[in-house]
Image 1 (spheres, rainbow, N blue to C red):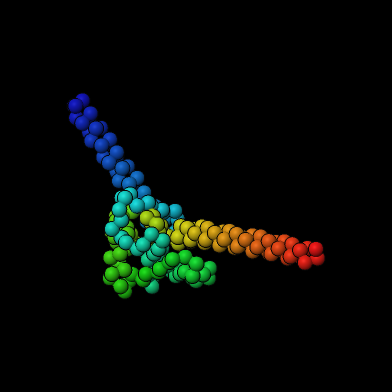
Image 2 (image 1 turned 90 degrees about the vertical axis):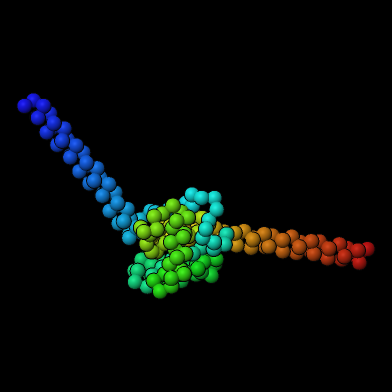
Length: 182
């Protein structure tokens, strides 16, 4: 009788532990899916040193779908902020183009993402993958600010060079005038 009680107790504890593990694992999966759909943080780096998805070093590719409202938000943001003009950026619509869908799958695999779990909007940039509109827009904002500061730095450098050239020209004119007066 005592052995039967112990065996029943062990069986119950095993069932409870297994159910708890299923609930915890299922909850994490659902939370990850919700994050992907709402655009919460999902940034994954390319874990391999060589990428099979070749878009070029400086190219940023956003994978999108016509039926995706978050994709539409990202595309509108890109247009409003002229990101497509300032950055080497491509938007690829995957729902009607199998080649683009295959590229999305390969980019996900390169970043270590289960290709059956990938969704849009999805961005592949410089060996990193970004899932969801929030992460994509944050990354693009950062890239635009870097681009603008580089442009401003180049402009300031040109202004400084022009100013120095004008000062040199003025000094030469003064020397010429002094030479003529002597």
